Length: 149
Image 1 (cartoon, rainbow, N blue to C red):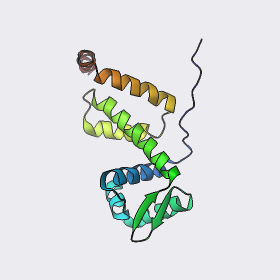
Image 2: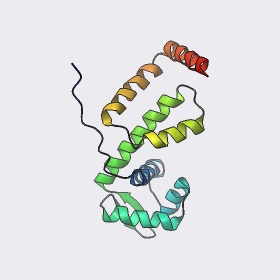
Image 3: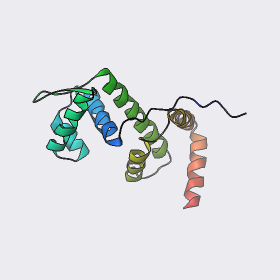
Image 4: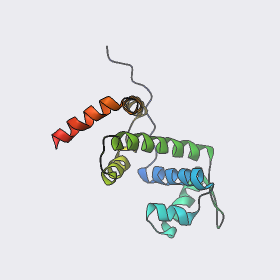
């Protein structure tokens, strides 16, 4: 009998919104604050584009934006930012563990992180944790992977 389908991560937000919330979350976690200039630098886009999106996120209740002061996540913004950062971290650790080059890992994770269900993320998290705790199996899998190329 198939396992009961669990609740999936709600992907009601566009990948762009998720990317912004992830960047804001990461900046606040790392520096204690998030400014438009830092978000623009990290995303590789203009400050004007960031300001426009931040104003949209403010209107939608994800952030509180005070011009010249910075961006603060609301509870909802923090929830989405934390979830996308978790997806990013799990996928990055899993793929990097197999020795894929960093650029490939980055590009693949950026595509996958917006389209993965909570149930699948839980499975990948379990696999990642088990593989990280079993160096013998990890070496065996890397050798098999190397043989495919």
